[in-house]
Structures are given as C-alpha cells and as structure tokens.
Image 1 (cartoon, helix red, strand yellow):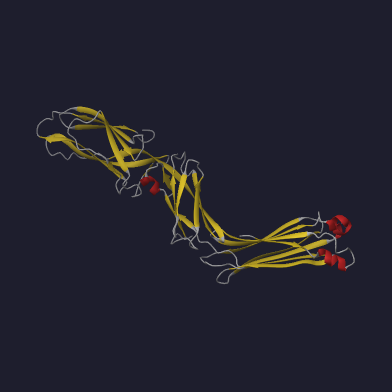
Image 2 (image 1 turned 135 degrees about the vertical axis):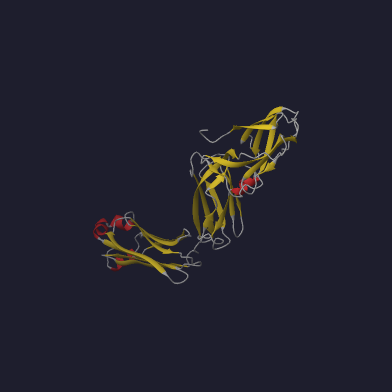
Length: 374
C-alpha cells in the first residue's frame, strides 16, 4: 500500500513576501510518499521526500539565489503497534537549494505476534535560509495489517507425477511460529520454484496449501528454492525453502528366511527400502503410503509362484513375496525370468531381479540398479 501526495510548495509565496520574486512564477514541486509494508517479522513505514528545484522555473530565473540558499529538510516517521509500542526514525539534513534530493526515512517495529492495524505518522518540513519554511506537511494513516506467515513442509520434493507422489510434495501456509493458520485469515497464497520444470497447484482456504510437481531430479542437495507469498489487502509476506528434488532411484533389501518347512521349495518375503538420488537418502515415514508398485516378468511366469502388484507401505517399504511349490519331493517346474519392479507410472524399473526356478526352489539375483559405486 502506498499513499502519495504531490505538493506544489509555497516556496514562492514566501519568497514573494520578501519582495524577491513574483508569486506568479512557476512553483517547484515536492513529492511525498508514505509506504507501509510487512515481511511477516517486522512492520515498516517508509517516508520519502523528493525535491526537484534545479529544473523549476524559479531557480532557472534566479540561479544566484538558488545557488546561495540552503535548505534544511527534516522528517520524522512514527509507527505504532496495536498494543501501543512505537518505533520511529528521523533525520535533519542541509543541502544547497538548487540540489535535487531523494530522501528517505524508514521506521521499523517488530511484530512480536501482534495482529491488527499499525497506525503511522510522517512529519516533513523544509526550511530555506532565504524564504523560510516552505513545507510543513503531516501524513497519517491506519497502517497495514501485520502478517504472521510461515511455511511448513519437507526439505525435499519427490520426482514424479502420480497423485500419491504429488500429495507428498505439499507445503502448508501457517503463522510465523508454525502453530496455526496464517494471520490475518482470508489471504491468498502463491508459490513458485527456481526450476522451470516444476509446477505448483494452490488449494485455497483458511489454511491454504501448495503442491509441487516435478519431473527434474536435483543435481545437488538443496539446489532448488521454493518461494511462497501470502497476500492480504494491506500487504504481502514471503517465505522460502531450499529443497532437494529427490528421484526414486534404487532399492535395498533384507536377506529373508525361507518359510517353506519342507525339504524342497521357496517361500520368502523380500522387504525393500527405497532410496533417492542425488542425496542417497532412504525414504522414511508414511508420505508415499499407497503409491502403486507393479511388477513384470520376462518371460512370463509358468512355474507356481505367489507374486503380484502392491503399494508402498506405511513404513515406506515395498514387500515382495517370492515363492515356489513347497514339497518333500524335488520340484519339477523350471524357469528363468527377469522380474522388474516399477513405482507408480515410472517407465524405468527401480529394481530388476533374476529369478530361477529349479528342483530346490527359487534362486534370486539382484540385477540393480544399485547405489552409486556398487
């Protein structure tokens, strides 16, 4: 919010009273700006005095007068919090009258959890050594509402377009202490990423959210900046987070025990942990719960087995059941196949395994992908 006043100053009236110039001459101009704003932590009010005497008709007609005269510009800006705390700034500076000046004074006051209007006052005065006081102006206003705003969310986003993955990339608009909704309520959330491959969907409400979708994995950890803005009628507060765009890259697994109690056969549950790049970090928590996991076999299975599609568990794991017949006699079915596991709609397998059915059961060989360097 900006309040602007443009004042044709009474400089010439003062000069005319001293018999120095006709009051009909063109008058110089002073622009006064008063701009309240908030960044979510502090409230600012900036008063600006812009004086242009050099191009005025007066100084062009009376060069010697403007060159010898000295102007004193004084400004005091005060801001008051809803509870009555105050902050202020002031200056008093002297310049040759003919100079063009752009002067500013910024008052700052910490929000400290206060919500409401922050009234302000801007007192400006200009005095000439020859013409006397030619500007005496007070500007007051109700001030902008302070904004309590912060963003809660992970220090990463996952690469992928499946709905479960995008849902995990949700960031929540909150107050500055991350203990409730942003204040004042009813504001508008916007967000953007420093990477052009990322898109964002905003969900409005008393607690608005931003969901990011990306198809581009980070090159380095924390190399992407997400910027958020919360806007109310009286101002805008911003917040940002540096995140890693984590690509679901490879799996590690346990060494399962054989649940077949007979001499021949295999019944094993492989439990996979999911890792991402570029951070080589394990996925933990329930953020990706229910994300589909599918498997294919090449060639197709012909021996008895218990396998099928599933999803990521609440513990961020994938459980794969590999089995043959379980018998007291050697098995008669034999086959070799390559198993491929896929997460969501990815076309790249996150794990391939060589499975061989023989007389003793199933043997299992990891074909990767594996952690970098292995």
